[in-house]
Image (cartoon, rainbow, N blue to C red; front, side, top):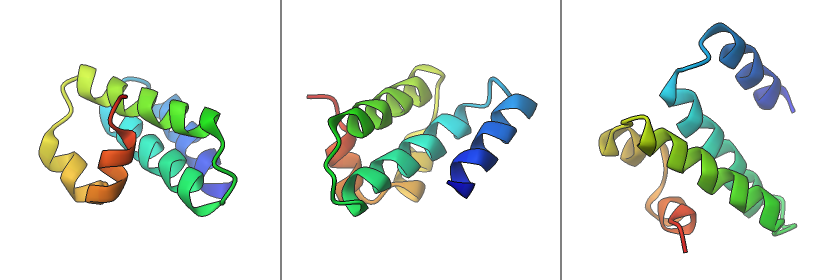
Length: 78
């Protein structure tokens, strides 16, 4: 998709940017919910990106800004 391509390009420019992990988590999580396929690989990848964001010191405020409460709940590790 266009968003995924732009995200990949930005990762090449800023490989360590933790915010990109959060954006990718939101993108993958939204795809999981909206595409109706309920692909467990998408959900797993979204959770991994959110975990990477948190591991790199990402802020809870940024999460709350970008992720809806329901998406945040979905992405919490089980």
